[in-house]
Length: 71
Image (cartoon, rainbow, N blue to C red; front, side, top):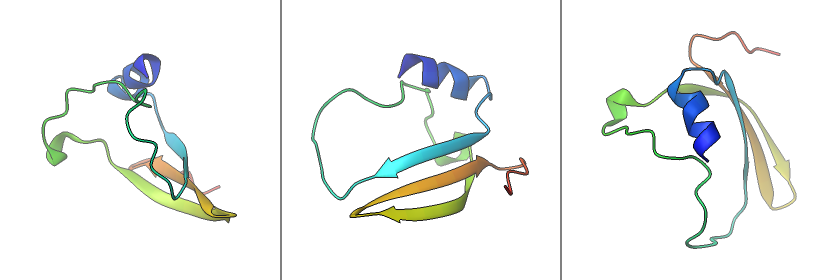
């Protein structure tokens, strides 16, 4: 979580791959550490490029706004 947050804070993440499952695990370890973002205006923007269903789950690919990433 700490390393991912550092990469995001430094603007070094161009593409995100996320797996989403229809279940809730509750409390646990965060996937991303604190980025000290206090408003939506400060959030980094990504554009969804691809979605695939994997059984009951889904895989998503998004690219940072301003990056080609059409492949």
